[in-house]
Image (cartoon, rainbow, N blue to C red; front, side, top):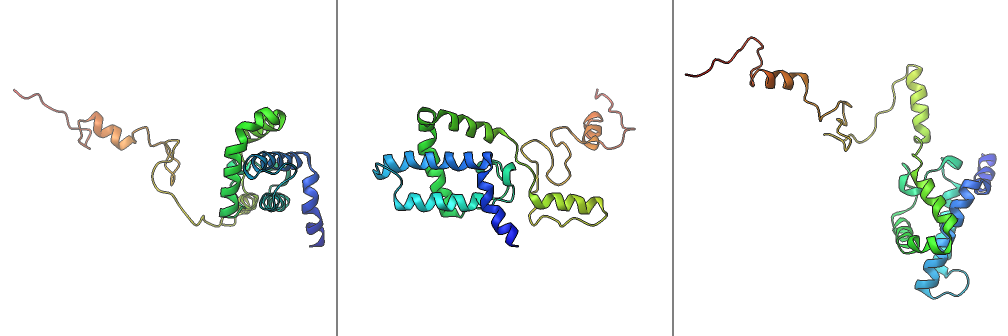
Length: 184
């Protein structure tokens, strides 16, 4: 246990996580200077927010493979902190291109990387391959997903099913022996 406690804050020394923390600090400095009137450094509220972000970043289960928070499958910020960070990013994001262009571009590049699976999903896949039943998800969405596949079956909902195709080919009847006779 002591190893994990020492290892997690050391994660912030990894280049990817250090850059993400530096980007967050730069955004907070821009927003704090313009909104709170601080000339140097951060106000108390912004200092508390960057310390919170650093703790959350150090505890992230993804480690160096962490996606940007917008793409993350695990939302570790509390609702108030998440809204504050969103507000800061909305304000400082456009200004980052002028004041910190490299950090801004790298943040956009990081945001385009796909999110890795949740750390415990790998354990579930290993358990499934070993013959154990995976733990079902607590929520199941019904209906088609945005990509046109069924959330429950993974089948394409945009293409008609074979039964529907047969009915349309036979003018709505299920029996393929039916042949319509022209009316006189």
